[in-house]
View 1 (cartoon, rainbow, N blue to C red):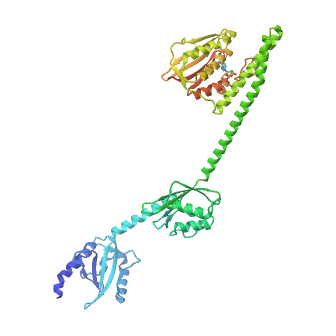
View 2: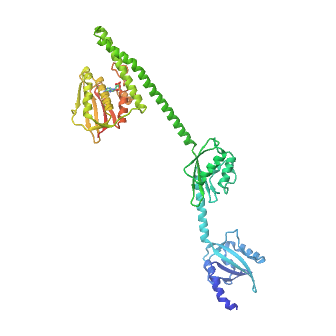
View 3: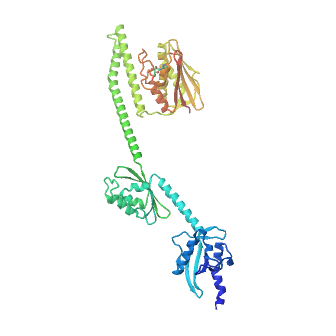
Length: 496
Ligand code: ADP
């Protein structure tokens, strides 16, 4: 019978997926299967009759021997060295990790020990790789500044960093891994970690839980130390959740500060414009009365003024007109600074504007004995994209300055130059020029570049207004000047 069984038994043993090594009570190998031969690199005949020690690394041989002896004294079926890292010894001397399970069999030849041996090199490599990845992941999570918590599909914490632990306060000092989101939430509520404001605890709990179950957008919270926290959660593909909580207190405070500053600035600016417009109205009314009555006096046919009186009245009128001019300029500037000046951008015939400006300036130029010219003579110029009234205002400012600060018998020319997408209009004079140390602040309000105590009337805001207007019309402004030689002021505006 036994012989009949021999062949199938051999085939069975050989096709077993694990290595089988059978030895007797003295540790001598009596049976090995094909897988064991393959794992250890020996032929069948090289193993039979050898000590089992052949298959264990040199360094544990003595130790292994005692184990075999002890096993023989109390044989039972068990995995071997369950707490140890076991290694096999290959014929080439190479060591490899193995898992071994032992079972005793009593036969007529005495006790036999059957060792099932499995080469677990691949598995160990994978485990090692997994451990490495897990440690990478843990360091990455730890390196994140924000609090980080990872929940599994049962909503239990499986990973967190120390920022999260810190954020959880008392709750974070205890065991957190393995606790559910709800347990954590209740823990933090009981420990008063959050500042709920006017919200009832149950409402807060429900809101927090709802966000956790179906997170959308961000959740802003405050803790009781007044820190602003921004919670962002995502569900993971495995039906778990990732929670990230960042402390955004600095950002919130900065934004608050900015908002406050802006509101203050707007209020101040509104108050200033309000003040300026009401003041200019208050000033204009009596001023118009002064100018109106001065005119009546001047034209009074019944009681005409004598030359002396007429001269004095002239001072009143010029002073009044200067004041009116100043009020208009200040009001314009206030409107621009408050963003309340509407600029229309429409095609403007540059040649028409130049002719009109020169025409208006002629009486003033004549008084100053200054010759006015347009060069090249205003012919066909392209249309500018500008606000006609405001363009006229700028050119009047340039032109009147060129005359005011010109020399008797001097020249003022309006020079145009066509660029690729813009037209440059330059006002040139051969007047007194601007001192080098005054040029940098020429476009600032009330800067009169050394003319403060001079006899030439002015407010020092004409150029400020011109610059603001040009910028509102998407153009540029500039100047060049030399004392005693003259000045050039120009603007460039887009053409149609
Ligand atoms: P103002 O009412 O004083 O003329 P502006 O703002 O128009 O004010 O000009 C500022 C200052 O720039 C003037 O006070 C003057 O000193 C100087 N300035 C402007 N244009 C010229 C020019 N063409 N030649 C010399 N100085 C000029």
